Amino acid sequence: MTKDRTLSNLPNTLRDMASEDDAPSDGKQYARKNGAWTELAPVTGDPLPGYFAKPVRATPLLIKTGATSVKIPAGLVAAVGTAVVELEADLSLALDTDLVSGTAVAGADYFVYLKDDASAYLSASESETEGRLIGGFHYGLTGHAEAATGNKTEADMVKLRGINSHSFWDLAWRANKQTNRGLTYCEVAGWVDIYLADELYAVRGYSAPGGWIAAGAQSNGRKFPVIPEAYGGDGSANYGKLTPFVAWDMLNSAGMDSISYQQFSHAMYGVQEGLAASGLESTIGRIEHYPQLTSRFGIEQATGTQWIWGADKGASSSGTWNSHADGRGQVYSGVVVVLLGASRDLAAGRPGSRASYWNYGLSNSGWNVGVRGRRDHLILD
Image (cartoon, rainbow, N blue to C red; front, side, top):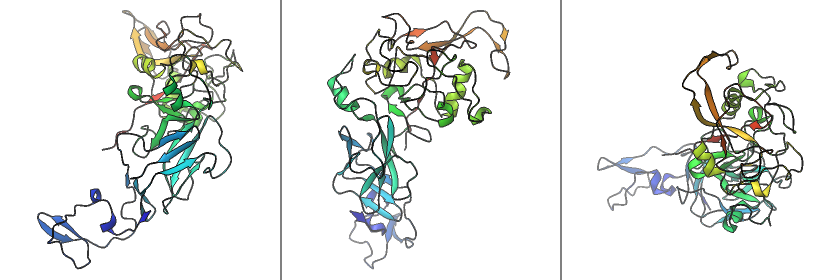
């Protein structure tokens, strides 16, 4: 139902009003202040333009009910335009029936809009004008009937088939960045890119399937990453390599961070350990779905496909000045940056959620090294 905009009809958490019998009863609005009743000014405009209160604060608002359906639980209270909407019953939404245009496409993000009449709809756009954007999710590449593989359980698969429930986000449960597209929540690892970075990752600002894996050489189907505008790019010129410096440019432009070894081992768990992608690919170099190499959080090509530059670094005991930083100063020391996960060509037994390589430095770049980012969870007081 839709509540009216008078202050008396807003939830008690929004106002400091008491229920004592001595409250004035002249029809005006009052609040208790320093032990006395104080008349409030009349409400004009939108009283709480950003108000959003979930029934359970410590979990995502959305609840998965099927491979293509979710529900918004009863108890949500949110401002929508000049109305304050309170859901008195669960509100169900399905990609088959509530998507405003087109049909659902696997590997895409969808957004939930709440309207001032307490109805809702789904859209592939983040910029709809009707209603208020309150959350969204990723409709992943995991098939609706896909069986468990690797270290994933049936319970894991229920969360991953179709809509990825780990990707649920809302206004009070999201990544600390501008968009939640292409992300899945991995608990201690925060929000992690579902897909490896492709050649347009830094320009687009989020991970997506279907493109070519970004790498430091254009072989085995890989492509050089395109330079983002923030670092002088024109939308088409590429770096011609993928060193750690390039990886950091890409992640910075997408509002992401490097993932640590510890975070990686947690986020990528669920894959078939020891398995490389060679022999699984439909198209070599394409960002696509391999059931065995999907993590329990729905991260695609999580291991055994492309090494990624990690956050952990080391250094030798002796060093020298070098010019690896692309003209942006020199670096003294022999810095080592960890590689994580393993590439498609690695021998059986070596790839996996704890696979790492500690012998590449700031100048290294190769076809088998790429990028995947992560971001902190946004905590709202």
